[in-house]
Length: 290
Figure 1: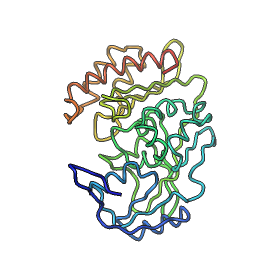
Figure 2: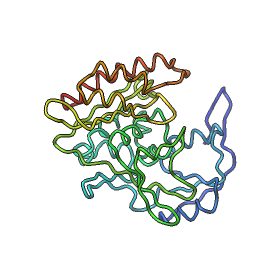
Figure 3: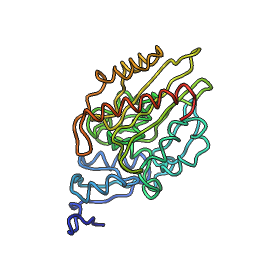
Figure 4: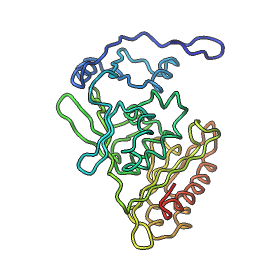
């Protein structure tokens, strides 16, 4: 299908297409061609194909691969399969109870049509720095399950996002699932973003987790999105917030974040908005609700 840009249709460059029957088959297909791309929900990939920003020689469709669309609790972790649609995750009682940060972020992703087709694995693998779910995975200290030609491995979220639209996925790798810790009674989370319109990419967003510790917070993780080439942890602000020093945490963002100017806003405005969101999310963390 072609998009219309400036009154003219824009079509993708030619590519081959293959439908994978299993994870192993997908690994085999992508391993044959270094320019192969995996097709899941296609909500980002199809747009980049039509704009010719992506020019794969082979698309490997994994939509019929069994076993990638489940949601389960395993060993104290919530495992979400790569083919779980955003809408499916948003309806899941398991995610609402055990991964409430993910549940809070889902309604902010695009629009219903996008959430009906877009997949959890696709969002993580595409690694858009302005997307909600990569930041949630980072804030939760989660991990990514990757199947490769040699073996299956897990990569911590802190190590998974390596650059602008770049991840630890290599040629022939297939993202199978993500795992995040199941929320305990002491767990706290917060989520907020600022966008020009609901469904637009956020100017700035913040996903956060912590646990209660007496009258304060411990284990604070602040993951910002829309402020750099990857989702970013604000580590100095985390330390200040764990000391119950909110003003110091906001001030620390000057060291933690260096947002570039973009078509939406200047870096200075984005840094100011990051502080606004930190005050909002810190209140959510203390009160135990978003």
